[in-house]
Image (cartoon, rainbow, N blue to C red):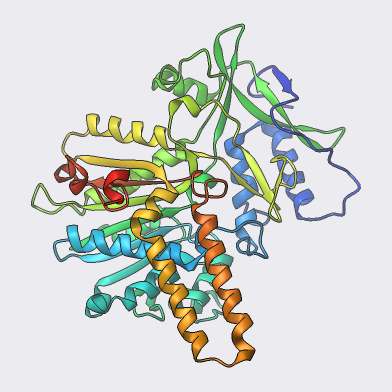
Length: 472
């Protein structure tokens, strides 16, 4: 057995462990467990990064590759699934940026990891309802970046009212390249950001807005723990216990490629504190953001003060280096939290987004590349962003619409109307309540070539004003 990271220490208390059983039927999680165990046997313990990749995107057994994992019948519910208001307010934010900064350029909306396509559907529907923009719908292009063929099919159904024939790949590819949404926007699918960039890199006169809603939380992470005796950082790895046929945590005593990298780039120095003994790091988040920024930079206009495009990020996470010492790696299976080492391929794996690290990265990128000024706003709490975008006003509108429709109905539909009003209020509460999603979820906006956005709130993007201004 090749233990490529040297001697290791068994970690017994990193997260709550559940006793797994060998008596379960031969299901998908045991099949993927066999694949993982086989790989560990030949190459040694896995980093958490490699484990997440296998569990989420294995071509045959990966969580996102073969099933509908969203909504009430899935394993978790995202904000767009909770309330239509969420997507409507995101649409307003997009339209505001387009009208204010595009200088007449066509709008490209790029959603990363669209799930069932609910957010994009709400955005497309809301844009169609903005009467002053209807003549411009031909200038709007919707791009969905989705690795899962199964989810691509669901997105096509929801956005285009088209059920693709999954047994006919040629027909599916042709439909994806030529289809429009049922609201009029052209729509395109891509399995990766790299393919999107390759196909669209020569587009001109475009204003791209990237939307990453609950996208980065699924990115693979590396986990590290401080060796208090040696005062050095060791990477946490995942090994296979052959006797119990289950996965277990171990700690590498020797340097791994990632500990060497973080030592060289100064990341360990940034979090050097006696109070920090554990942290998580996702290099793919920064690689992805860099690819997006690089693409948007290429859309730069001849005028130096013209904003090239922007990114809107919504995810659960934290925004302080002081909050970095936490174990956020977890799994969700049928709406319940689970030990992340159980049911690989059957449960969603996730970790909190380090917004402070994203802001540090943007700042460092500005120093290295002085030709483009990148502005980072937030992270702010979801309840603050949605409040500034008018969630209270929109909820009131929808309740009034329900009441008006109620006045034209017979008594048999009264219960339905009342139930719908209760659902609207309840869903808005979930989005805003500090005990639900209001605080834990954060928003961040990144504007490329945004030097004109210096100064007070009047130059900040809507949704990111100070609380005093939002209450005016």
